[in-house]
Image 1 (spheres, rainbow, N blue to C red):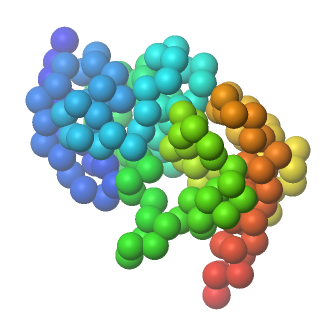
Image 2: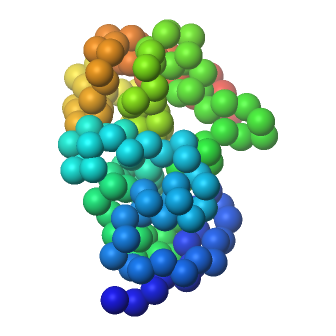
Length: 159
């Protein structure tokens, strides 16, 4: 097993020494202190550990860090801009869509990825994109509403 020594996370290069078979989640949390990404089930079933790997929502709990080496990785810590929350973060708060916090970062990262590839998703498209992100508090209707509002905010902000 080889060691990983370069990770590109949130626009920064990190030099680390980690077994390439370790989970990306464990390296993010334990080695780099990026604790916004959460451990949920450890089996890629709940979505709590979702990060964007080259823009694609990826379950970091089962992704070997060696697979991510050299690819752009975005975590929840990397989506705010100039001290401002991402519109998805803002609208999730405004819609009271997230309660216990178990799913928060994973839900937000999946929603950010969706809105990057589909600027005006329908409710059905949102539901399909968010499938696999489990909310124990069952605030799914509020999550869909928040994503719709975020899409509108992003649309209004475009030149």
